[in-house]
Length: 357
Ligand SMILES: [Fe+2]
Image (cartoon, rainbow, N blue to C red; front, side):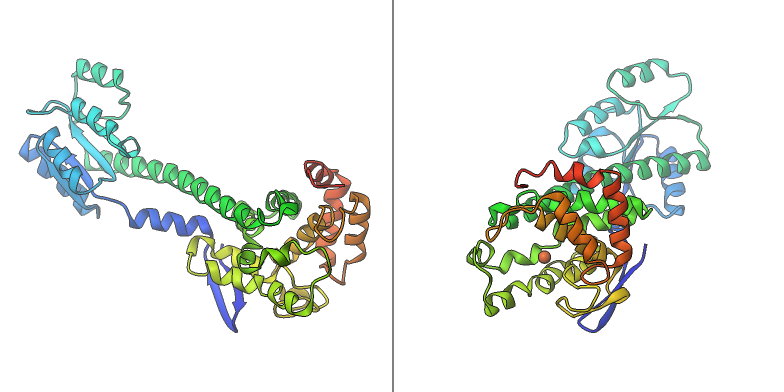
């Protein structure tokens, strides 16, 4: 998914967060480590892999392989079983005990008919064998599919680690305003309901999740005295408050993985009629994701207790959203919001809100 947005009078385009992460994972691939005591077999394996573009390290036995690994983490290990000093089964056990070793794909090369080796390996959890003699096609197919599977697992782990840190950061910022507890999680839940109704694909919904979680991240600069104020804000306080979209966008602009959230962070306070901030964009000039987020952000704010007022009940808040179609909100987004409401999806999410009326 290529997304474009305008910021500081420049046009930006970026790929989806997952795409950027996948690229980063591939960039950090280590070499393939070939462990084989037979020199001619070793040269054959190495040359096949090098001709396919892999970077290869070699070792003549398990102990030598561990020495190589101490210098550089391989992305995959291809190992013979019977070798002097330390055999392949022992090497496998040692690798799995190392920190991070569990994630390295490990393929055994076995001579046909060595059943007892296979039985010994299986008892240790080895499930990957290629039987010798092996064709270059078989070898490359096996290496490629194991690397791909390892990348996919790494991507899932990285993504969930990223999301956990983002949530922690967003919650830390919110925590200063006790009335907005769980705000980002509800905003995300409402937003995802609308995105499903709009039939957005998975990548777009992932970007929306970043946006929902990070939309107010720029409030890190807003004093608690302003966030927690019970009277209406003075003009100079509004000035500070209105800076949070630009501040938030600047905070993450150098993190390629999060770039898809920028249009939402930047434009979630724009209005369909052009009376919003920071740029006063109107209508379809406002990115679609930001138009969606504006609706659910406002709905959650209305239905939560705030320092300066009590929560508005759900039905009243719903009516207020409907009334703002074509004024504050994109009429099409309000239509989508209405369809989700009629299916009771939004009420179900709202009823989990502890600060609701
Ligand atoms: Fe905001």
